[in-house]
Length: 165
Image (cartoon, rainbow, N blue to C red; front, side):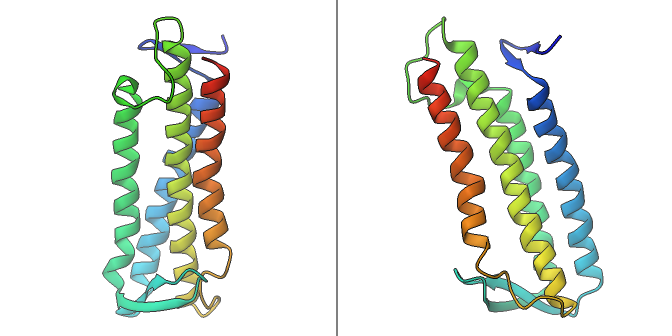
């Protein structure tokens, strides 16, 4: 069976892979953050400008904020996925399109959850590499990465939503 009925909308094998990937990456994010914390001096880079150049330093305790925020986002989106009727939709939800629209919205949320964790993991890894003198900042790649990881899933799912009215 390719899909499973959960509440009133479909959860596909791809959706389950997104959920498992998010969980695994969140665990990796915590491990990297804890390793960074344990092997860091008291002062570490905590902010980067739009070019990826370090422009702020602070306590090494701040490195634990990224996995903490990711965890809150992870659980918040996970709860929201179970309540897709609370979301705003760009088209009118009818009994005929309800399940499909809910599935599309939940897929978008799963992709955004994964994207958020990936961005925070990237920042944490680069911070760790900087502390170990293996990198000098985030570089130019962060801004395009964030735009790609956040905007593309939203645009793709909105397109899906309009196609499947």
